[in-house]
Amino acid sequence: MDLDISKGSITLPGVVSAIPVERPYDIEEGFGFSQPIAYFYGDVLATQNPKFYTKQVQNLAAVIKKRNEFNKSASSSGIIVNTMGWVDGQGYLLLCEAIDAFEPDIILVIAHERLYSDLQNSISKLNPNIQIVKMPKSGGVVTRDAQTRRKAQSNRIKEYFYGRMGDLCPHSTLISFNNFRVFKTSVGPAVPMSVLPIGSQPQLDPMKIRETTPNSELKHSILGVSHSEDLDHLTDTNVAGFLYVTDLNLEKRTMTALAPYPGPLPGKLLLVGNLKYLE
Image 1 (cartoon, rainbow, N blue to C red):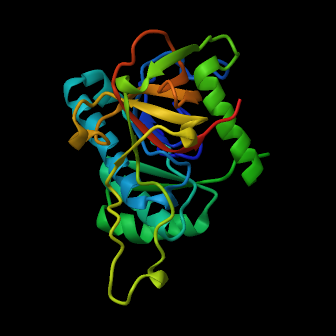
Image 2 (cartoon, helix red, strand yellow):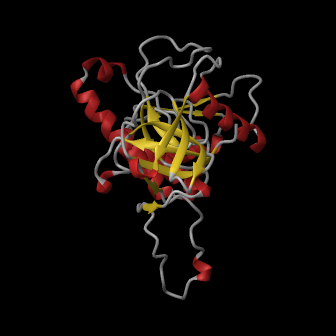
């Protein structure tokens, strides 16, 4: 399970995902070609919409729990959950909500004394069956700066379309505007309470998506292709894969996008957030 939307170790940044691991992890090939399950968030920062992030984490947890009910092999082997590195303030609350969703037996805290202490005081008291283990940081490990993180995110998107070794060949697909609809997830800066009238609350629903007309801003965006055919369950449904928009022709009403394989899209409802990529 990968809940770290800033890295996207399984699929892409901006996505929470899971994948079955049936063989030792290969450093060069990664997880191989096992089919992951992914829920689209749309940004590399959970601060943009913490409620929506939690909703997608809960959706992923619910699907995995249901899968384990029908798959004895998966349920007996257990789950490894990789969480975010943001553990201060709101980040700590999101971590606790993820713990509630997945109900782990063991929590590993790496080189973070305060986090270990906070979890001991809160989680252990509520559920003494959860074992919290403090671990040292491996030798030579350093904290990555913002520039290194951005480069890693870009490389991860490139790997999705071209492969780790550059051995994959994505297909450039011309798609008519009539064959898809684009919906934007509510990831973006919240309206500061200081600019609102006294006593009022922001009207924007953090769970609501809105349909957007394809325009020039869509260029270089990463789109999630949803399996859903129902608008009411669009964000509650996992995505089949991703598109990279390379060009738009507004006069001819067509979009050119890179796709992992040729042929028609597996769904007509597309999700967009703030994810951008420049080749």
